[in-house]
Image 1 (tube, rainbow, N blue to C red):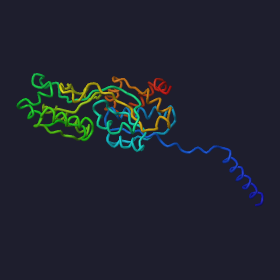
Image 2 (tube, rainbow, N blue to C red; image 1 turned 180 degrees about the horizontal axis):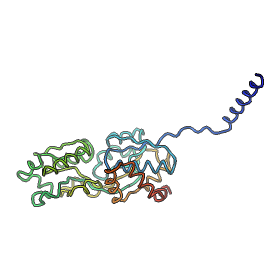
Image 3 (spheres, rainbow, N blue to C red; image 1 turned 120 degrees about the horizontal axis):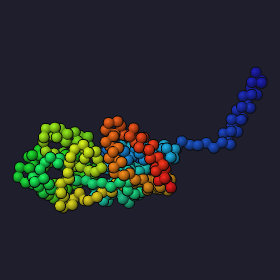
Image 4 (spheres, rainbow, N blue to C red; image 1 turned 180 degrees about the vertical axis):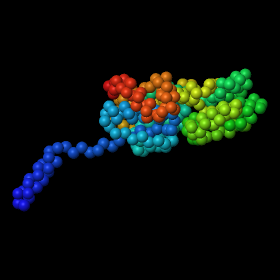
Length: 287
């Protein structure tokens, strides 16, 4: 019994000595990546998460919410970065409000926004937003303009377009990206006319033949640049990850291809496969 007691005391003392000598590593707080439930945003966010986890070993957490909530989260530092801010036009309202409380880390890819209609609608009848005021045209569209969500930047620009073009016979109908495209699909199957709040890159342009309406007042702007925006202090706190995000770019063709592939499998599968094929290119973005 005395021998066993002596052994336990020695082992306890050894364990205490080891705890005093070996460093105790606290669990790393995850990098919190905000994203919106859009096809391109999901891929961009999940690919960034995959790269960060694999190259740095740092845990990540994906946080989905509407864009207004994401900007609030950046301002109060409950999210580290979001990789889908469309500038200079679509998200100008949020940028004007929060730009002093966030940091711009650069552009991931370029895009375009605007109102689009099926190419089957004769251009002689409708080719521009002004044409929507022609007699009888509003009724052909069911007096609706379909939108992916209420309150986001593109929705606000659509409200502005309705006012500035005097489209009194139209109502902006918001649901979600999936809801908007499901409604478009139903209209297509019934040979009904549709107007949607569209954007590139998106698989909708591969699935259906769509064309943008000419916007002579330039309300929706020209080329949009999709930025990574972080909370203040993120570059100082995580310089290696910030360097990656400053170099993080995606070719449009690759992004749209991934969007199409994800429809037949899943975003996670497509992102993992793409990352494995391009691992060296992403690793170089940390330099």
